[in-house]
Image (cartoon, rainbow, N blue to C red; front, side, top):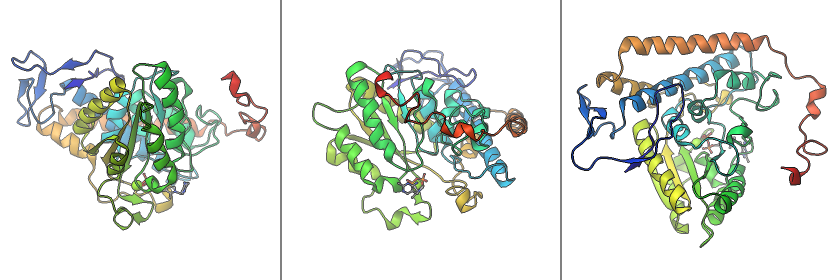
Length: 374
Ligand SMILES: Cc1ncc(C[n+]2csc(CCOP(=O)(O)OP(=O)(O)O)c2C)c(N)n1
Ligand SMILES: [Mg+2]
């Protein structure tokens, strides 16, 4: 199976050409068995991922969790009007971010994320301060100038298009970038993410139809992060289909269901599916089963709920296997917590947007008003 290698250095994926796992005699690459023994390639538990990859994923998952928990604290202390985010989706979002071909323009991947994209962006290298400025509505917020709420990111330089509050519209908008990529690139793809409940909307069905037209198939990774809730409506009361991803089968779309609480499975499967899309220029509908660890949003209280905690679960696995040392892990949490706390203190003193700036970046008469100039 082909894989992308990840460097352990600061939140960055190193683009090493994909290597095949050795079929006979393994070379010196270290992988780890649960016993804690370091062995050559072939260890099953971590699917051949290197020590650096495992540690890097864990570090990014912790960073993302600490950041989200800080956002919740900011909201609860009255420092923000609203919180929504992604604690519980780190084991899916981080591997996704690591596998993105990051850059600007159709030769790189596009991301049409929903409001649970923090882990993906942390893995792509987003600093904590960007997220904190956004939730605190500061003029310094480079995504929206302090005009939108948490997790509504926008990073044009990384092809991260603005997150929309009306859910599911991203599945339609993503067709546009995928279509351009079909024409202009031989390897880049469009990623579109969303939730299970939102898949009931027509935009989702339209996306599947347009992504799969014969001979016009689009290079899209269409994901559904299934946490089995749409605010307070249970999945079990709404879905006749066993899996949301089954709906892709009617359109001849390749489908996949993964345990999105397992970062190793997520990484390996995402890597396989993304390689397929890059090569075949056809869509994949991938469903990741994930936890919703702090409920829907601040609207439902933002309190910890009793579901699988993928960060702690992965951490325990790595500790048990000897990949991590407990002292280092404690330090890591502490350092990220300190970073998040100090950053929120800094942002607190930054200005809020001025009243006049409400007219900035409007479509009509603004710099975005003429699509021919894009
Ligand atoms: C078009 C539209 N309809 C309804 C809403 C209100 N709303 C916000 S989030 C949400 C639930 C979405 O659930 P799901 O798609 O499963 O995503 P999750 O929040 O569980 O990740 C709803 C109904 C909205 N924002 N936009
Ligand atoms: Mg849901």
